[in-house]
Length: 115
Image (cartoon, rainbow, N blue to C red; front, top):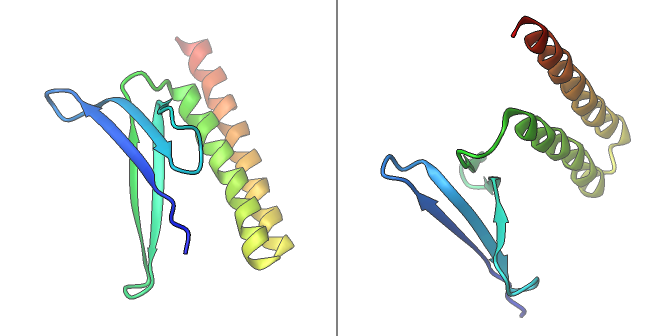
């Protein structure tokens, strides 16, 4: 049986806030990849609950976070399609992603006019 590993390193400041995130995978490049944010989720079948880790560095900007979430929502639709082939629900997820991003942009524009 083949085995693959993902290694994640988090450098924290004195207040335990992430300063640097890097990761590498045995099936990918041997070089560690830098990241400003990460979301990792696991399904606990026994407890029927999702366990997650979500971290971001101090350098992650609000607009980057919105882009990150838009892309996550959109790719969650792709994953759900592969897992279930439920196109109606996939379309709902993708439409939510678009609406989310549009609303974020509208809020940013209003805040920029006020600021």
